[in-house]
Amino acid sequence: MPLTGYEPGTLKGLVDSTPAESILLHLRDEYAKRTLPEKGVDSVVAFDCPRTQLMVRTAVKGTQVGTHFHTVCDEYVIVVGGKGEILVNGEWKPVKMGDVHVCPRGIVHDTRALEENLQYLSIFTPHLPAGTDINWL
Image (cartoon, rainbow, N blue to C red; front, side, top):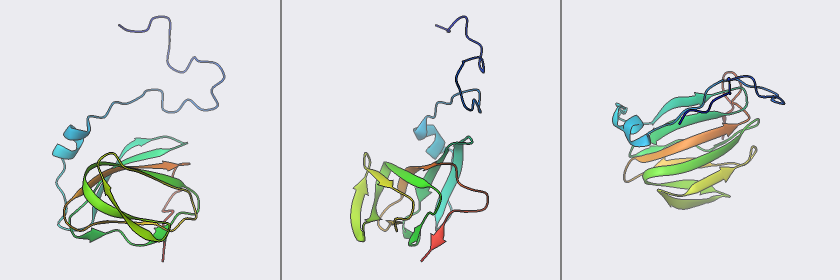
């Protein structure tokens, strides 16, 4: 049932109301329509606003992203399919669907998918700065 008496952008007290609409992702459909590269990470920005950014990603089997840290953004990684490993506090930890990695800015981390593709969501907050916020080690 539609909400009546509500106009997007009319709520009081918002610091920022951009964008003016929410989204609903069907991850199975998002991943099904992708053509993956032979190596590396396939990454598509699914939601973008001044405060945060959501990427739908696949680390292709045999891929290691590379050890790095972020100076501006915290990163939340939510594993939604496959298996892999994430470097957490200097140790490689196995990850599978349902696992969440919360990585504050300034913390060294890495992701690898050695035996199968790893599907995950990356949420960056605040929004990634223009260019990049990846500092490779």
